[in-house]
Image 1 (tube, rainbow, N blue to C red):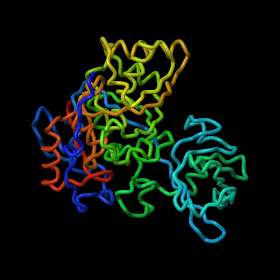
Image 2 (image 1 turned 90 degrees about the vertical axis):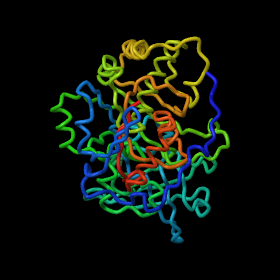
Image 3 (image 1 turned 45 degrees about the horizontal axis):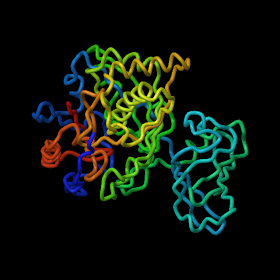
Image 4 (image 1 turned 60 degrees about the horizontal axis):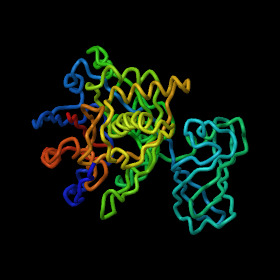
Length: 402
């Protein structure tokens, strides 16, 4: 297909600082909810969400768990070195596996104050884990690609345990504040399970056990996917052509049970958050790759959906191909990666509705919202600002129908 010319200025809006929610509300489901359906906007509270979802809905949410990905070390001179975990490199790139490693691991990172960290210098930190004090070491093994090797002196302790015990919650930079104790629980969904994200799937922060009970009582089906959110979610678009914007690769894990639940419910899928949207749409394109290329490279490049094709498989055919691949490989969980970039011109294959927060101007996420709403995104965001909605990660919510 012809990729449309997009002027990023058309997707900017003025976001006053006082509209950014710096802290969460006392109660998760007390947030406001903007409901958009067929051009009509209404304003409710998030605890109304079960009433707005049809009984035949399949609600899909991202069960990734945020790790305290910001590790702080101090040189003997006193200089503070901040290491932010981005992507695993070795001994495996599979996030669930590297988190459980009990021997040295290598990660691609962002490094604060890196000029003070000399080549060959090993930084040492002390981690209190239970009754044990463990020494954690960091060695910069490739300055250009910012690869850091971490090692520790107790092989009975997994890497995830050290990170959980010593790391700081990686709050979004636009909050412009240090994390506090409350963030450890509140910058995490109540259903978070699989460690590996460096940013929360924030649309899910509004859900409570009581909300889920109401959803279950109504008979609404649920399914989980896992997309480990990368720091790239906060990266503003700086390229003059949006297609040149680098999309970070994010790791996806989806069980056979989830895919088997999606298949008969195509057309009724509501995604909780943009990360779930990217996962669900990427699953469709995994199936297309399997059908078109007969290969096993389950990686979706950012512009793969926009390639010229004589025809596209139906969502049902695509998901059936994914299941056939899993049968052939005897897989209970499908793993892949995606850079999928959803912007106006994209046609959704799986998702019918989206529960999401309000996003930054000129971002990849506002482009995704505009893909759903068309020009109405300006009206929706204008009303949200006028009605004093709270914006961004700790802000209010919306339910948008495609």
